[in-house]
View 1 (spheres, rainbow, N blue to C red):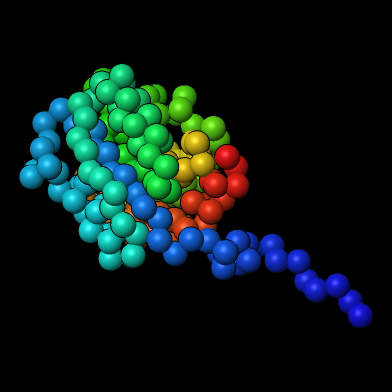
View 2 (cartoon, rainbow, N blue to C red):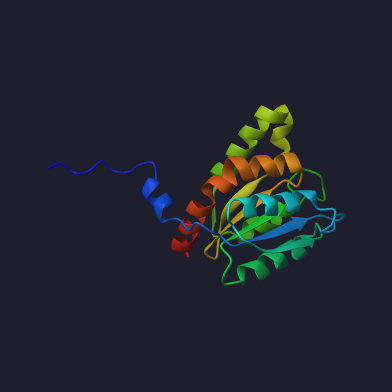
Length: 176
């Protein structure tokens, strides 16, 4: 009797992944309100359509201390499996979300930013290199940092986040 083939594709991880991942959505903006935050609204829409409950939506100013405080509050919620931050990922002086979030991560998932920029390049060309999208694990949760534009949000949610949300959330709990 031969050994079964090892599963190098991670399919067994996906089968064990949670089907619903309660998620907090944080928009980083100096000018948006919940009523005008179309990027954060799209994140929430896509999450709910995929069966992932939105635990909260919040807007914080593009200030590192405020961003870090919002992520810390989210990490303090026991029932949360993921955090998605939108906005502040470009190269303008006020775009500080990656610098604020990365030190809070236990582990960076570099493939997320790499794939996001690759897919973005297919849509918008060389301007994709301006994105500093980021993902990682923190405190047993998966954390995504994505641009705030609706086009970028749709791309990130549809092509990367929704397809891997349960899998990454399941792995984040193991990494705790």
